[in-house]
Length: 217
Image (cartoon, rainbow, N blue to C red):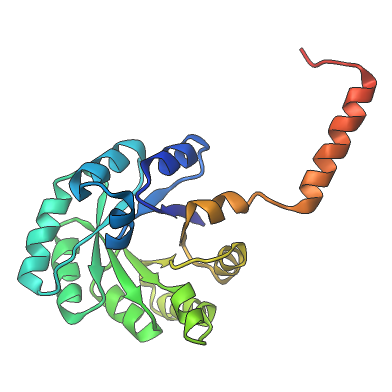
């Protein structure tokens, strides 16, 4: 599974990238607002840090304006992935952009039928929102599983990018189902390494090593 980090915080991105854990980054208007920076400036800085896809989202809703904004975002860097809304105009733009060789990420997906449309439009990534489905009383993971089956049935190359992840368990379950990518908040990504038995075992090893009185090197 590929790991993307879901943030526009350059400090967090640089830290995780230095650990060798990042395959890409996703941003959205809310994350740009939180970063408090110009979208083109911060996105360019992120693209310079990360080799993989960096999703930058259009804010337009009509086809012509979506395409105009997409052209602006695409010029920022070669690894820009244009993030598009799952609407008819968004899908039309997805088809046009992928036909021109751009990476695309169709976002705000909440059903397998929506994901089917995105794959038909040639999306590079589809972003089903797990946490938001859970908030509404649905099982977000069931939607991931349905999309996986649909894509496997027909050999679609669109990658399932599990989004709106709220917990370590979300990451685990998405991986078990076979999501291609998880885009994860920085704190949750760091929490993947945590386990009480790991901490306890390390504490014991260090205590025993101190008793030997030895040093390595």
